[in-house]
Length: 510
Image (cartoon, rainbow, N blue to C red):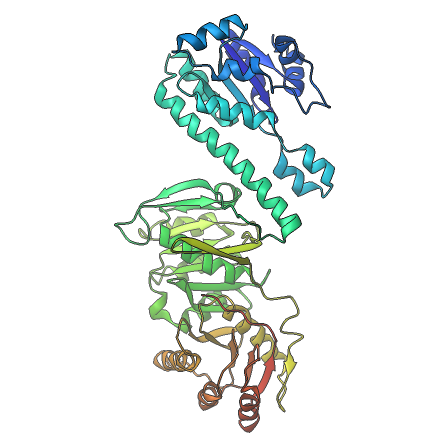
């Protein structure tokens, strides 16, 4: 029995090789892996000695040889293949353990093109694919976390066809993901991220009980390792819909950096958000915006949940609570809330990945774009186009409202007063309907809108939204501008003594 070991990630390889030799395997190896094994007194034969072909071109060619690929690929149940292998002195390689040059790690640490190119593995993927293709006779490993199970199965004679099939799929996933990273990188470097083909690859985090609805199957995947390493569910099973709502809530709450922001989301849209002096105050103010919709919602807290805040949250049925940290006594208290799910991500403040590109599925394909975000000085540099100017407090509220609006489904408007969202209209087919819907909800919640500010993620096409806003006492408005009727909107703002700012940048979210 011969095992071929050639790994870039050498974690666990010494112990694995030692166990293989004790099971009677002869080990073939190359380069750094061979050196590591020899340093630990593990007997291994160099591939170049076995093939009688030296490594060439600074190691670019090592395992690309018929005696290697023949030993992996020949059909053990085919008499002609067996005869030819014997005639050519080809050894039966029945276990292949390979992982690849660290291409991804390389592009993260350097922009040196020559170094990057040299970290494109050629022989590794070839051996993995060959072993995976011949999985009926060859066991292929690409992940050090599988060493323990493989050894157990080899010792217990459980190296079954079913298990080799499982490892075959994992191997093809490994090489496919590797090639996706390489192709996407070069398209980013030379084609601004939009090449002839774009690849979306994710790793399974966990199946979900179902998808959006009980009759749909679902699962959760990640691009990197955020959800498997940083994001943790402390209580409860996180559902498909929970994950999409968490995404919306944390994106808003974390967009205010280290401020004590609390955001409440229901069905992917915020129904409350506030930034007060403390997280407790922020939660209370966020809840006031729409306590009815908050029932069964997701709450994102940009800071540590203590017992006092936990007790306040416990007064309302919340389905998911997410924060960077939660104290032990707060967790103990909330453990009594049977239907509440609790997650943490981050350290002192909420941490969330910021993907450079965004895509949406459409039937038969997907659309791809650069991710959208509010520039640091976008509100500060906004142009005042009205006679009235905003106070410092109003500018603070305009910035909050504008950031929230950029993360609310279009068409939308967001009203903020004293650093708290007091009304929101979202997902409407006309902007004036969004304006009216927000006002109506605020009135139902008995919220006084006088003195609040208003943000829109896109321009107002008519003055009707401004007219509705002035009826409830809106004092300042921020929007991108760019409508053919901008002057009509400006004139209406001036007539009603409303400060009006144009940012020049739209933030649709569909």
